[in-house]
Image 1 (cartoon, rainbow, N blue to C red):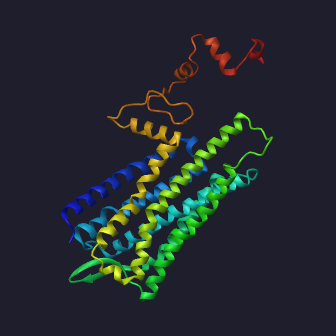
Image 2: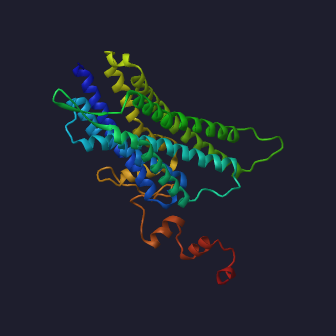
Image 3: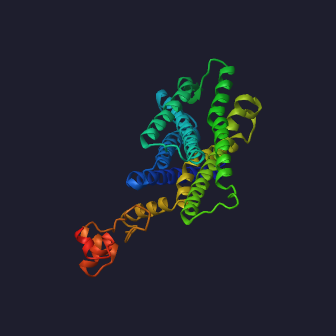
Length: 352
């Protein structure tokens, strides 16, 4: 029996995750898709993670949470039980594999800077490959999930041919979802950190442009490292608990297991909220895009103008060409527009 106080806390925490995840990941998708300057290869991967987090939010919070915690049985059809389980696993794998793709992209760009950068078309192929591999990996769990009848009520659970297959499948999912991605992320990011934060050889000078680029790269690496750490911290305890439940029968009789399970499950699901918060805190362009998008919502005000360098025009930005020139150059005389716009020094250059 679970106390009323614990149930109330769980209701509030899951509801908060659902709202923050929908708003945050929706803003990430909107900011990137609404601005051409934000549609870089890395941001395309970030949008893919946001879509995966939205799928996770819709497939893990409303219906499965209601069935397992509120009703304590599955009230829907068998195919919905399979779809929700399958969608949850696919969404987690998409996040893990997309992080690997981002790390490889950064590793390739920093280790071999003279090679051609990843194109947007190639990034789309990589995203399609990520979803394909995630679906293939989760397909056995789709086949094994079904309704289990106990005392005239149904539960959504997995049914494997034997206990050996059940343990093998859970261990395989743990390796593919956590162990292999974490090993790849650790290898690539450690090498990137060594190169980026390495000391400059004696006598090698750096100009202001090199210093600015180095700072930008370090900020991006810090942000992606924070995203990776958040993923590992949120999902590793829950995955370890699933493996222990699969291999340790004594845990099923532990009286405190429901509290531990809900705590670890909430921590894993709450990962869908953290990426937008990380982007907001550690990326200037995402922060400007979030503020601009929120200010366009009725009742939240309007952005008077866009910030320099964010590439995201606010709702208050003028649309008329003459108004743009006046605000951009802040000129009083029409002749100054030509002089400043074309950066001329002599009247003869106007004719040329």
